[in-house]
View 1 (cartoon, rainbow over the protein chains, first blue to last red):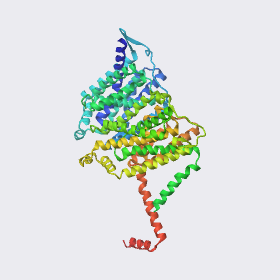
View 2 (cartoon, chains in turn blue, red):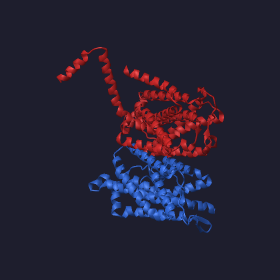
View 3 (tube, rainbow over the protein chains, first blue to last red):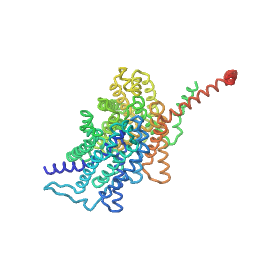
View 4 (cartoon, chains in turn purple, brown):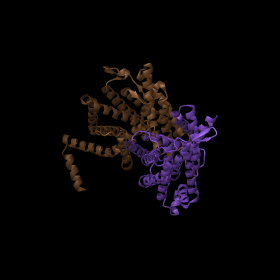
Length: 287
Length: 348
């Protein structure tokens, strides 16, 4: 019974990181309406950033997460300004193929630079645990999950409360109306893409504490984010976070009852089920 | 007339060339033809019916594994399993299409679904011991066996002709398919879904058939190539990068044209292989170079030549032909014609 419970709790913790990762995708899709195919590749980039800084300076990935987020923000901003803003009026499949090309380029650049070996960050408390009665939770997972939650909440607040967040939501809600009142939508789109990328940056830094990551993992991460976003409802931010936790739990139990290498299969199965019975996802659009 | 001569020369060259080529070049030609074949199958779906698949490695891999697996386990003849593989992939394709298009949801969902299925297949085949699992599936290679066409065992030269024939047959098949009622349905769907629907075309049915056909054909390519390559690994066969490789040829050559996918594959595959060989020669070991090159060429083509290389050159080539015709005619018969034309030009 306790193992059963602790497997589930661990799933929740990992799921919160998944949720933050998917949130990044959800923001980009909700605002820019472009499917970011290079999402997993950006995630891997963030993970490698954190592990390399960790290996060089022995710094805690949690401490460098803001730095990586900042870097990813500018990367995302540049990508939107330089490439994706030009694609806005193209057919959907054109956008898709171009972003798949970007993903292929990023992945192989990473493969050339970082090599194919799995990397993870180590910190002084890597092996320490919290014990709640008989339930044992890794410290790194608890910290990573809490930070994911905090960042996600901060993001919700940003979109609800600040002026910048409201203008971005205006663009997402009605682009023509936003242009009429004089909003520079290209700039705002780029900021949204930057914010989405920054989410990925934080999620990646946190993930470096929990998983071994190789460049080959990127397509799976992209797909996982999509599964989460679709289950949560395309464009719904809260939905992405909740669905992330849900997928985390499903994967944890799937790994526990079958073999860990099969756990992703269950999230794909879930995607198929959702597309069969509720293709619009479980939450309403928030943008 | 000229065209026929040109085509005849092309056929003769492609039939005789491998006899004079070295082994390495031949292997690259086979690889290019394989990508041309699968690219053409993908093109049937994207280029003519307008439905994007990013997971064609699924059908290709399924064909490869079914053919090779039954051959290794039970010694079943590949020409027998090819029918089975075609049907299995077609049914799977139809199911995915039905799942994706039932609610007329946007293309995004469908493209994602194709990837999800390919990834699922990778994970499943990783755990199927019948097909060798992660360790891979190997076809027995007997030395000295020359040409055993009926068992698909033999020298690379045989596979060159197999792929040449298959690719040519596929092109002819699609060419004639496009002239049928169903072909026009597909193209109507590609051009404008709503207009097609308003004319009474059953969109779902056309989409399902197009995907099933494309998947089934792709699986034939996969099966044939498995017997040439003799080894299969789930992580390579069903990889996302594989799916992208399959759509490289059509995209660079020209989506929605008959010749484009062939041109694209015959151009890109040798370039990619040459690049790898060159790096090997220099002594650099950079595993991602080929795919980096593919990604870059895909990006540049999509941005600056979105219709692909072939439509760009097509006009130029047809002009060349008509020029030649003119030259010929005046060589054969009348100078007066040319004189008259010049006169007309001066008058104007």
